[in-house]
Structures are given as C-alpha cells and as structure tokens.
Image 1 (spheres, helix red, strand yellow):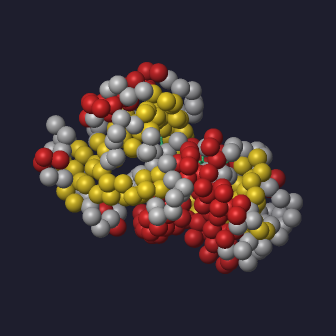
Image 2 (cartoon, rainbow, N blue to C red; image 1 turned 120 degrees about the vertical axis):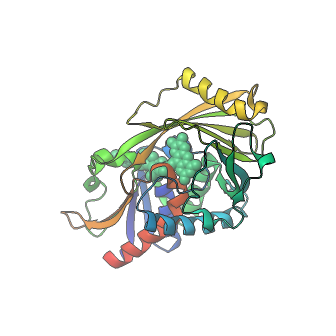
Length: 319
Ligand SMILES: Cc1cc2nc3c(=O)[nH]c(=O)nc-3n(C[C@H](O)[C@H](O)[C@H](O)COP(=O)(O)OP(=O)(O)OC[C@H]3O[C@@H](n4cnc5c(N)ncnc54)[C@H](O)[C@@H]3O)c2cc1C
C-alpha cells in the first residue's frame, strides 16, 4: 500500500479516515480549508441513525460498523461519545427504519411515554456525540499516531501533491462540489440552537410532518442542542433570529423545561447531499490514486467509521 496519504478535509469523515490510516502505520497528512471546529461536522447534533442516505445496502454495512466502534468509544472519557436513551415520536404511524434491528433495545413506546398529541413512537438507545469534543478527540488521536493537519484551501485535487506516489483521500464534504467538481452535490442547510441544559438526559426526535422544519432535542452534559432545519440548496451560514426562535418554540412545546433555557449559540452547517454517497477509487491524470469519500448528507457521523474502513481496503487494492 502507498505509504504517504493526503486526506483532504478535517470534518468527521476526513479525521476518522485519517485516524484509521495513521493507526495502520501510514504517513498521513490532513489538508483542510477549515479547522475541525469550523466544519459542518461540528454542527451536527449528533445522534447515530443512518436516515435518508443511499445506497442502502452499503449504508447499512457502514452504519453497523460505525455503531460498534461508537459504542466502544463511549467507554473512553474525552471521546465526546455517550450511549443515550430517548425516543422518536410521530402523530402518524410509520414503518420501522431498515436499521431498527441494529439496535438491540429498540421497542414501540407505551402510550404513557408519548407526548400529548403523538400516537406513535419508538424508544431506544444509541450513540450521541458532542461533536466539538469528538473532533478534538479525533485530532489528538491522529497526532498521537503521527498524523498532521495543515490548513490550506485547494482549488483542485491535483494541488494536493505533485508526487504521483502520494494517494489522496477526498473527504471535502460539500466543498467537493467545486473541488472535484461534482454538480450532483448540493447543501441541505441545518440550523441548531445551543441552550443551557435545564437537566435533560434523554434525546427526543419528533416528526413535524414538514420537510424543512425538524424537531430534535439532543442533551449533552451542560448544554442541549435544539433542532432544527433541513433547507435544500441554502448556502448561507448567517444566523437568523426568526429561525432560531421557531426552533426553540417547537422544542419547548414538547419539553416545557426549555421555555426559559438560556441560549448559548447558533450552529449552522451544510449537509453534503448527493443521490448516493461517493466512496470509490480513481486515478488522476498525473497518476495519483484518489479515493473519494464524500456526500454523506445528514448521516456522516453515523457512517464515518464504516466508510473509513472501506477507504483502507480500497487503498490497499489500488496501490
Ligand atoms: C444541523 C445538522 C445536524 C446533523 N445531525 C446529524 C446526526 O444527528 N447524525 C449524523 O450522523 N449526521 C448528522 N449530520 C450530518 C453530518 O454532520 C455530515 O454528514 C458530516 O458532518 C459530513 O462530514 P464531512 O467531513 O464530509 O464534511 P465537513 O464536516 O463539511 O468537512 C469538510 C472538510 O473539507 C474541507 N474542504 C472543503 N473544501 C475544501 C477545499 N477546497 N480545500 C481544502 N479543504 C476543503 C473543509 O474545510 C472541511 O475541513 C448533521 C448535519 C447538520 C448540518
């Protein structure tokens, strides 16, 4: 296998891939326009659950492997991962997702567990990730394994290296739209409000029956992340008080303890969305092996370890 790898991107996909490769003994350099804390990945809530991303057979395999790794990480202090319990609820009945059987304790809610007005739901436990903490953990783990991070914006992938022996792993998220270029890739903007945690421990996701206005409550130790939105083709990262107020109101209607919670910050990110995740190898005109690993939509945190494992196999097959 090629010994020198450049990973483009320092979000959860790039850093997880870089950790996997560096811990396998390869010389790994991460190159990224933005530092980890300024990426979309830092904005995610982030609950494991491979929703709305294709192709399903590969997604389920990536998600299953990631679930196992994340459950293990929950035992490591400082990883930012914990296994949390909670519910997803809906006013209408809905089929169980195809990943339901990956979670051993998933079961229908009893009527007394459901919020007023909601007739359906499931209760389960799954990894919940404090993303700023987790990205810091991944970067530290990368450095311990000898990897480095350089802040640099590339205009094209061939700028990453002039040496054809260097393999490039493209984990540039929505940036791949220009970098590859890939016109199929588009953003679905997500808006989160971070509030002081009034004592919540369980996550809650509710079906709003509205495609762009989501309702999610993700408690971390001292803060709680309130969601959210899913706005296709919206690129602006500018805070918007009207959107934030609507999010807090939606969440407080289900969880009254949030009514007076102090707002700490707004987090806004662009889910890198494509009809299917792109995880494949190609060779550049200059001869470099390129592994593309982008387009994970609203599920990148849930797929990162599975995709990183596949990048390792693709690299050893291609080099
Ligand atoms: C509000 C919200 C909630 C979410 N909740 C969840 C959840 O609960 N569970 C879940 O699994 N997922 C969730 N997601 C989705 C998840 O956050 C994404 O799928 C994931 O962060 C994508 O990671 P990434 O590393 O591919 O991209 P990013 O985090 O965007 O990182 C891309 C990296 O590439 C770099 N880059 C881009 N262009 C260039 C360039 N030209 N040159 C150099 N570097 C470049 C960037 O600087 C950055 O470092 C959520 C997303 C949002 C927005």
